[in-house]
Image 1 (cartoon, rainbow, N blue to C red):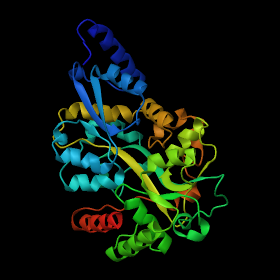
Image 2: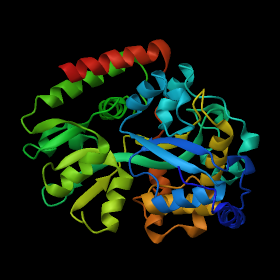
Image 3: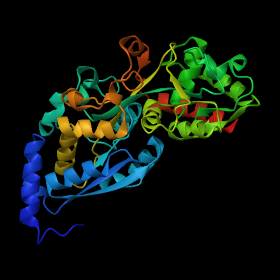
Image 4: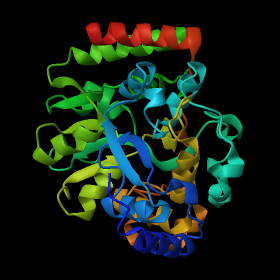
Length: 360
């Protein structure tokens, strides 16, 4: 922890300045405290964290996880009393609520909630924004190597129809299985948000059939897929738009294409939530409110190149943020869906089907 003794006045003045700069008031009680943030790797710039530390007069300690399942496991193992803010994906919020791992929010403590774009308020995965606040948003689509495959249809057939790719290496998404089963459902005509056990089973059979193709190389999470395409290790795989936007921006993957299947795919939101027994809920609220300020929200998205849910941030977003890759067109938005919430028995049924697929 930083020593605040000798430079307390300087830090207080800096915090007051940044507080006014961002339209926030630094919480006096935060001086000398620590915010414990549990987040995805490389999902917030160091510069923005330093600005928050100056704003609050506190220190931020960030720990990382690589999947929503890992987040939930840590919270169940006592992490709900170790972290102040966590960043679960939208489809996972209902499960965390059902298991009592995140608390109901007091929106009076988050006045910058008013900055959110209307489409990100009162979402299906968290009615009335009761337990979470949007952090970043994006889409799940298909990344591909343009030097190997081209003129592809905007369809999940790119993955599931062997005639479209008889020989080049490809992967399916690992993780919870929600996207992969949803993609198979959409290809079969049940829609990306299929929610019946019978549909999941048919989709699972398609995935198992796909696994047997000679050029299928395995299940890989979305973030690494873009890197594998860049290296030419694979030609096709499910990935996230921000990963492609980032390497477009640094010009390291100009041979990578990205498409959104018209049969339907996911629009997702990574959210900010407060664990049930968070060490310092007051500081957690202050951090969430800071991220939802106009300038902090813009800096966050300009760093990540994922969509900002913050209307007040829009005038400050860089040009790359306004491309269809990052901000889909109105036509594309019509076939983007939040994954339906699953909890309890329904979740157990889905997990059993997905586990069988992975063990096949």
